[in-house]
Structure formats: structure tokens, C-alpha cells
Image (cartoon, helix red, strand yellow):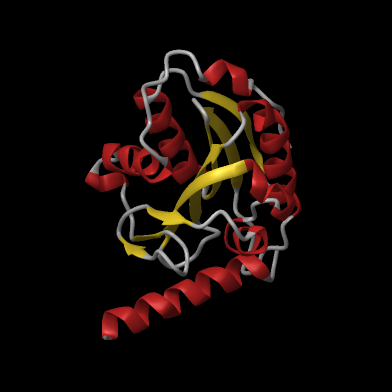
Length: 194
């Protein structure tokens, strides 16, 4: 019971940190990431593989998923039907929810601004470039609480878009592990959050 109460409190803190307070260049193309990319089962499997590639010294306390799919210390599935909820929790552009059909997230246990990774499967590959730009714009214009994340990274891995924001070192480590695991990864945006 205590664990459930703690998880709920942390989820509420995460939502509040994203909801209240809140430049680089594109360096890759979404189309570049489909070649040489191993088959990915789903968004949760993508984040789990990258997280598991982290050494113990690189890991930190995390929670995964969203309110309905909360997981301790691992990535978890997120619902993609409610664009407003995705925007509130992960700064996803609310009007683009119909462009994705699967999602997963991994967030720093104490503060989403410290680190958040969210992966989305793009339902129609033709929408990938539009989606990555909309995600970049949504994250850059988000109203952050308790300070700004340092950095934003958006990558494409096959038919998935992976958005990271938070402390620069944590984003860089996650990006490096993603690129090592998935050689077809394209870094579309890698920039400071302003």
C-alpha cells in the first residue's frame, strides 16, 4: 500500500513539474533511420533495451509509463489516445496524437525536468518529419516548473521517434546507447532548451 501511495505521489509531482513552469539545428532525417535498424517489438522494448545498456554507474531512480501504466525502475507503456494527457506529462504535441499508435516513457523519479525519455511508434512513416518538428516545437515552447531542462534530443529509430530532455549528461548518455544499439538511428535535433 505504501509503495502505491509513493508511486502516486511521484506521478503527481512529475505531472506538476511538466505542466506549470516552463537552439540547434536538425542533423538528420527521419528517413535515414529505417535502414540498418533491427526489428523493434514496441516502444517499451525500445526504451527497455536502451535503459538496460546503461552501466549501473550511469543509472538513476526512474519511473516508467503514465498514470494508468506506472512501472517502477523501468520504462513503461503510455496511452496514445489522449493528446492532452501526453502533452501534460511528456510535452508531446496534443494535436499529433493521431499520428502515433504506441508509446512508452522513462522519467527521473524525482523530477521530469532532470530526465525524460519518450518513444512513439509513428503509424504512417510519411508523418515522421512533421511529427519530429512538432515535437521539437512543443518541447521548446513548454512551460516548465522548477527550472528548465538543459537539453532536447529527438531521434528516429526505424518507425519510432524518441524524444529526450533533461540534464545534458543524462541525455547524451541515453543518446549514445541508442546509437550504439541501433546503428540506423538519426539524430534530428540536439539542442539546448531555451
